[in-house]
Amino acid sequence: MKPEELTDTLKAGFEKDLLKLERLGERRLSAHIAPGAIVNVARFMHVHLKFRFIIASAMHTKKGIEILYHFSDDSSGNLINVQVVLDEKRPEIESLTGIFAAADWIEREMHELFGINFLNHPNLEKLLSEGNWAEGVYPYRKDK
Amino acid sequence: MGEKKIIPIGPYHPLQEEPELFKLYCEGEIVRDIKWETGYNHRGIEKLSEQKTFDQVFFLVERICGICSTSHPFAFANAMEEIAGIEVPDRAKYIRTIIAELERIHSHLLWVGLAGHFLGYNTVFMWAWKYREPVLDLFEMITGNRNSYAMFKIGGVRRDITEAQIREIEKVMPVIKKKTDLLTGAVMDDPVIHARTKGVGILTKQDIIDYAAVGPTARASGVNIDIRMDDPYAAYPLVNWKVITAEAGDVFAKAEVRLLEMYESVTIIEQCLEKMKKEKEGETEVQVREIPEGMGTGRAEAPRGEVFHFVVTDGSNSPVRHKIRAPSYVNIATFKKSCVGQTIADATISLAAVDPCYCCTERMAVAYDLQSGRKLYNGHEIIGISQKESEIIRNRNI
Image (tube, rainbow over all chains, first blue to last red; front, side, top):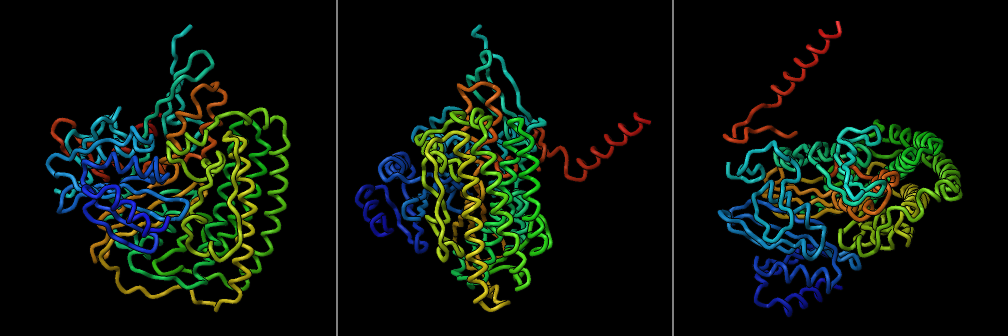
């Protein structure tokens, strides 16, 4: 699928929730979406378009806590970032573990390092620092 | 009967060279469930990266993994070059590709050796590691190091491969090919290896898609993904080669994929060397003055699968955010599928089949008091505690 086709497909399918589409490079796209639509968009990418979920990156910016879900279209080499911005005070978003098992670990890691609450995650426990890290201290946030 | 016993593998175990705890919930001989504890190796590299300059980050990410120490700098360079919009000279592309492929050969040989060792077949272990030596010698000749080669920089490579070195590499390639023939024969035709690996630790195509597994783990289950082909970078689109896949998804298929991939690596290196001779010696980099504000994603196919780096820059000289995903992060999670239902004896080889790399997965932790959130120890204090402990042991022994 060419990036142009992908842009059109996304525009047609998620007109309301699609906030911004950016072309970052020859085979790179970024789609900003409303956080409420993440499950539908992820399911569309994984089930319908057969994209592979690479990983998600969270970051703390002036806008709040941002998550970028990176998807790879291995048939064409395109890489698309699905970007959401969450409220800094109460970062919450629906878990993607119901769609693909690959979301399990990274959501636990983001929960641990950024304090993001993933709703309906079956086992939202710490992944890396079991038992030796203070509650409510999030090392990857930039508030200190 | 019916009671589940927990059999731990790790965190420190003679079978594993790195710390990780797997708890096998067994009913008799059969593994019914598997749980794990990670974090023994978490070094906070993503956070450290934010405090380093772009040139320093290369040395940092190179130390994520000792075996595939080129794949992380490779992916990071790809990400940075995407942000800055840089096209590296062809000679640099060939050198990058040669280093990456030599690394694939030595990493796969290391795996074949370890797999043999896990099966109790130590002849394969001795052979594979012996034949890995000439590759490491090549690295020493080209880069000065047997591991952690420090070849990459933004815009090119730090060292050229000279005419004389090209001739040396050309001499070693047929030797590697011959030894791979020997190893492939020894593995593919051996009835013991067949019996121990065929039908063991099967991952179906759906498991791979569900867990988003990558690399030889995915290719052995018939999922044709290889970043070198799908999202081509460096010199991969300039040479002829093919992606190796197998259908069975068991441990044997994973061994087959890795062994046959070594031939492809030799083919790629030979073509790169031939093409490099036409390029002017010394043209190995472009000058990079500034890294603009932006975000970039870099991918590289490491021996274990796709390495993914995501970098955000703000126009300063260090990353604002640097996310790293190593292939083992997604591949290790597939144990839930490959080990459950197997006997304990097969669990070890099923664990080893994805070629897990724990330091990659977790990429120094600081201890905090749970109640107050106060830092308990800093680095110096931890070293102090360690030295005191050594002193006590020493005195005890006297």
